[in-house]
Amino acid sequence: MTTLPGQFTSIIALALTVAATARAADPPAPPLTFTRDIAPLVYRHCAGCHAPGGVGPFDLLTYDDVRRHARQIVKVVTARAMPPWLPEPGFGEFAGNRRLDDATIATFQGWVEQNTPEGNPADLPKPPRPPTEWELGKPDLVIKLPKPYTLAAEGTDLYRNFVLPTGLDSRRFVRAVELHSGNARVVHHAFLFTTQTSAARRRAAKAGDWGFDAMNPGDDAYTPDGENITWQPGRAPCLRTEESPWLLPADADVILQAHLRRQGKPETLQPELGFYFTDKPPTGLQFKLMLRSTSIDIPAGASDYAITSAYTLPVDVDAVEIAAHAHYLGKDLQGFATLPDGTRRELLRIKHWNFNMQDSYTFKEPLHLPRGTRIQMRFEYDNSDRNPMNPSTPPKRVLYGDTSSDEMGELILRLRVRDRADRGLLNQDYTQKWLWPDAVERLQNRLKLNPQDANDHVELAKLFLAAGRRADVAKELNAAFKIDPALPQGHFVLAHMLVQQGDYPHAAERFRKCLEGDPDNFRARADLALALGIMGKLPESVEQFLAALQLNPRDSLTHANLGRIYALQGNIEKAKAQLEEALRLDPDQAIAREAIKELPAPKKP
Image 1 (cartoon, rainbow, N blue to C red):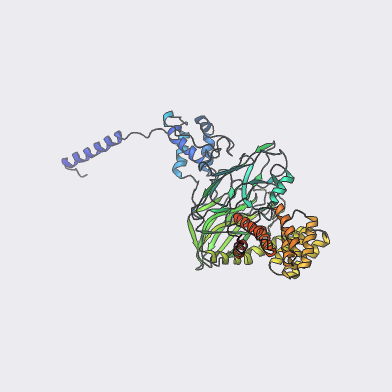
Image 2: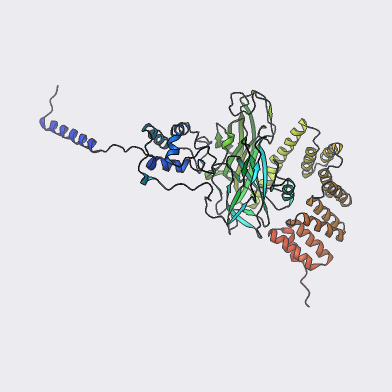
């Protein structure tokens, strides 16, 4: 054994003494407390839903609230079931990621292990904003359902379309919209549409309570250009950058389509929307692209049924936002892109789909996808009795459909395009190569199940008319008229085919047949008026245009065409008034803009 010199022994002893002294001086970690450590986490991650008026089944605001549910909180955050965040890590990078990190989970675990001490009340942070207050501050415009709507206790899920007039006298650009559902317990999710016609108002007036029940809000309802504005419980307001506000037209109505779930007792709700405007028009151009399958047919017991869909981009784009949608049988939902060089880029993956927690996700940075990129989706479904979400016991065959007991599969992307030329090319290509074939397939699948659905035959005829396939139009209309010879929409489509052929007298007859069965169809009346004008029957044309505007005074195209007829009659004052109204409703109305330039100058007295 080697003996160290005395000086080295002294140095080692000194070092050990210094280390021991340092350890003794290092204070022990203070105990975790609610007021200092837990409340900030709960307020940040939980209180948005777990507060009065929120969707959570209990409140998490006070020490007693949180202590009572402490072990339950640890269980769900450790399993990463809460806060709700479905995307898998590594499959897309998203802003607003609610997934808790390991340190936060460890803090919850440690607090429970220490028997949930409360701590010093002086350490308690400021309580979070109540869900009933506007998160983005006072809105520029608030529209609210005039009176509460009562949802009956029993029955199936309901899709209710609330029709809310904006009352705007000029168009505005919207930078953000925030929804207060009025009762988060019953509103599963909601979509925002706008309309400039009176069709939705008339449907609502017939149904009562400022709304009507339907999955389809109407042919005249549309989502703002390139947008997908949705709300789910706990979701942040739909905020857009300064380059991408969306247009809310003058005199538009907003249609809030809410998916309502019954609670076994009557429930009331009174939704309201807050709009935040900007004076700056968009400098970026948006495009909404959707992939889906409408041929879903899931056998009872199948646990790995899959659907796919794909589309190849004809232009460069940047992906800004992505969402996936399925119903209760959804299991593993994937969206990805294959670049022109063969590289695979993950867009989104949800391995454990939950119908009750769906959302849309904004990329942290816009994702560049060059021309030639193939965007693909692959969704798997579980229709077995091992799926706890399966609404059918025992499982039964499930087809594509709009109700919750049916099944759907959609991947939706909000894209940014370079310029108007690229957006026009993308729109034309997407419509021809994906959107039109998808719509045809959907209707053909429906008609296989129910060939006696006259309305579906007419809808299919509309699609064939848009593609110029007149023989197929005639075939579908003949099938529809065999079922219902008076079907108004059938005569409407036939009238438009006759217009394409230049046969305006017979087209006018068909428009009149349509109006016999559907006198409130303002579009048929306006199209009849235009046909009469082309035929030179100007007084009757004016009469029909005025009748159309009685039904829908907010249609800029009808005002523009009436202005042109007045001009042909030499009534310049009335022509000018109609054209100016068209431009007030839509400053980009091309027909009115050109026609008003061609009006003769007023005669000097």
